[in-house]
Length: 278
Image (tube, rainbow, N blue to C red; front, side):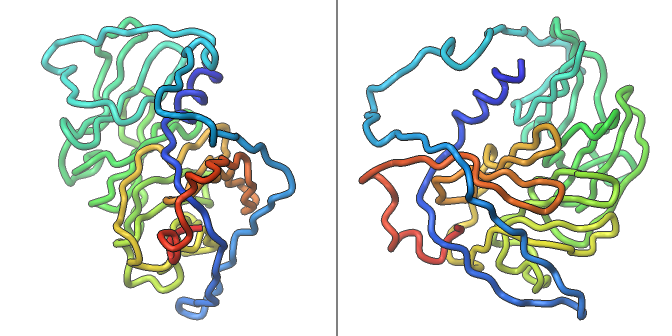
């Protein structure tokens, strides 16, 4: 199952070009925000420069197995789209962030089990379930409009809510006092510490502690990329916009190059990448 999930996620990464990191020594309220260090000592290069539009491969080449689950058509099970899936031993948790705006749990046979949270502004409710992850034995759901992460147990009971002062699109919880966030260019103009950065870490109070992946503010259209931030085994795999490299972000604050894709003469020209993300 692990091989299958990672393979599918890797395939739907959309690649572009890359350039060098720039840094700014900005401080907010006198508190320094450290730079995440990138290590490039060992990584795998994937050569795709000879692949043309007619190239194809079999799913069996990257997946152990392929199966299909027919979901219940009951009214309470209605879901518009599947933006994210969490696989547990006996159930699936599906997030539909934009159509039904819901998070629902199904059995492996497709039967509806329960909803996790509901639409609204109160405790345990969300306007939009923007992203989710499993943290220990809890389901954590982020709502970008309410700017909070809400925690539920596996039976769907609301446990607590953690509010943040900034906007984000995706997150990962390394531990109880270390959160990683990814935001887009049009967000968080008021926070100078992360003004030109796509990824940043905070403690549980929302205080910025580190940042990475410089990109000059408002120099490109803000893109909502659904498949560029992928937490797995307490490591986040991340691909910046307009980039041909996949990085891993670790709990100790380090960033490592994992994969570099060689497009040959199809690499996006530097003049189109200038001022973009790394």
